[in-house]
Image (cartoon, rainbow, N blue to C red; front, side):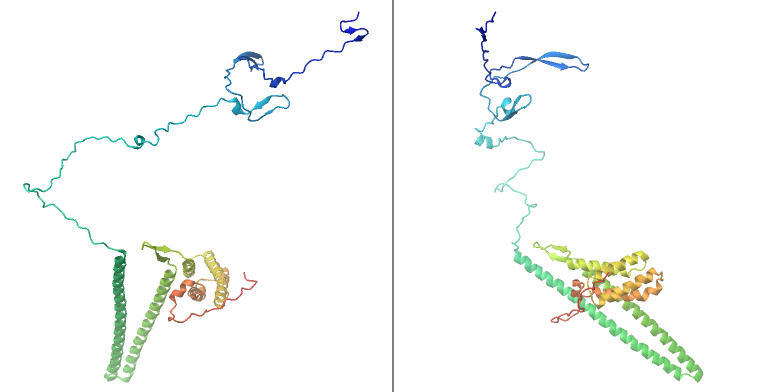
Length: 387
């Protein structure tokens, strides 16, 4: 027997089924239930199912589309979080009385208080006597302008200059008086020596004794002259060292510049910095109580300093430095190096006093005004094999 779907000898075609309009994950008719069942695996390996209550908020408007994406494998869609989160209403402050007189006026409260000490004010009257013995009258001084201040500073400066020039003049006068006094003493001494010779010649001694007395007198005079020469040489050396030390110190002093408010300020310039470095090298060069390694370091620093220039003076300094370093490496004693070190000190002092190497030295040159200082040395190209 043919089935219900058979017609004659053939079969009926199958009935077509309608395709859903939306996929399962995007069905607009889907309504989320109030509770969902969640199955979870516990720590002991068993699974447990429990219900979760879902709080649903009523949709006040159509959910805007802010973008999102769909998972390719699971087909789950993810929308922007702003479309899924309830908006929080923004609270604005009340600005109705923001610029009102009441809001901009401070509330003043009047209070009364009782002071510990009572005081009062009483004006003059015909029928009242007031004690005015403790009254003080204060009057303002006349106005002192900036021009008057400059004039006062000029006058005070002239006063200081007068005192300073007077001091210099008195110092020179006393030096001249001392020079005249020393010459007078020398003349008296020479006269006394002549008198001693005259006494010996007029004495009743024999010729042999007179010769012995004259020889003793000459020996005393020679010894005194040698002592005087030694003292003069010592004084000259001490004075020269003092003048050199003062000159080097003044070269390395910072400049005093006056600011707009009249207060001076000390400023280090490249010239003073250069002079200070040379002064430190010169002080280290004159120091003798140092070890051999320290002395070699000082000589090496001086060699680097003078190697910046190529002239006869710097070549002599480098030659002396190399000679002393060679002698120190050979273990020579300090006494055998005294003459070499004196010459090296003098040449390096001459290097410091040359304006081409130390620009601050130009302030201490004793050259009359109107003359130009010619360069003492010509700068040459440094040799290629210089170390």
